[in-house]
Length: 414
Image (cartoon, rainbow, N blue to C red; front, side, top):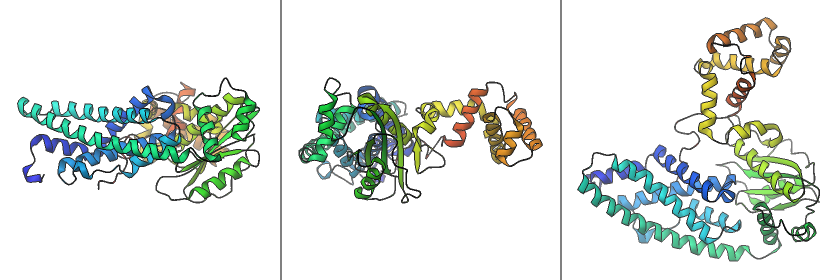
C-alpha cells in the first residue's frame, strides 16, 4: 500500500500505530485489564515490562501489514512477544491464561483505535466499510500470532519441566501464587531445598534495560547474597530471584554496570516467603521510576515511596498539587525544595538543617521563607503531606509526556 494511494481511514490507522503516545495509551489500558483479570500474574515487574514491549511490537507489526510491507503469512512472533511467552511458560501461566492476556491486549488496542476512528471526520458508509476491512485484517494477524504463541508456550513448558532447577522454580511459583498453604512446611522445604520455617529475606538481581549480562553473572551475585543456606531460582530471562534467612550477605561495593539489586523482608514463615519477594518486586518497580537510579534498593528504605508511586498519574498529581509553584521556579525552586525537605526532616530546626546542608542557619531561614512566599502558606501546614511530596519530587521521575511512565517502549518495526 503506497502512501499515494492511502485512504483517509488507512492514514488514520497508520498515524495511530506509529504514534508512541497513542500506543502508550493502549499499553496502559491493556496493563490495567491484566491487573483486573490476572492480578497475581502481572504483579511481577518483568512481566509488566515484557507485556508492554510485546503489545507495542504487535501493534507495530499490524501497522507493517496494513502498510503492505509484510503479509500475514510472513508474520513471526516479535522478540518481545517471544520473551513474554517464555516468561509465562516458566512461571506456570497456562496457555489459556496467556491467550486470554493476548485477547485483552487486542481488545484494548481495538477499542482505543475505534474510538478515535469514530471521532474522525470520515463519512459513515466509508467508515463502516473500512472498519470491517481492518477488523478482518486484525483478526488474521491475531490468529497467526496466537498459533505461534501456543507452539512456543508448549515447547518451552516441555523443556522447562525437567531438572532440579525447574522443580525448584515450580515450587517457588506455587508458593508465590498462594499454593502450598495446606501442605506441610517440611515437605515444601524438602522439595525446594530451602527451610521455609523461620524468617526470610528476598533479593532480585537483574540487568537494567539496554545492558547485557549473562545469566551466570546474575545468578552468581544472587548466590553470593543468599549464602550457603539460601535458594536461587531463574524464572525470569533477565533476573535471578533469591531467598535466605536474614540478613543477606553484604552487597558488593561495586556492581557491574547495569546490574541492579532489590531487597525485601525479613518476614516469617511461608507467608513471609511470599511477602519478602513481593517487597523486593515493589522495590524493583520503584527503582525503575527513580530520577537518580540506585544500584541497590531495599524496600525497607523506600516503603513509603513504593506505596505512593503505584499509580504514576496519581503520584504526579499529588506532587504537583502541593509543589507546583516550586516546580515552576526552575533551579531556584529545586534549591528551595531541597532546603525545605531537610528542614522538615529535622523537625523544623534551622540549626540541624543548616548542619546537614552545610549552609548558614540564616540562609536556611531565608530559603524557607522564600519557599513559603511561593507556596502561599507556611511549610509547616500539612507537614506530613508536604514532606512526602518533597521526597517524591526528589526521588522519583514523575515527568509527563514522551519518555514518562506509560509511554510506549522502543520496538523493532521490521
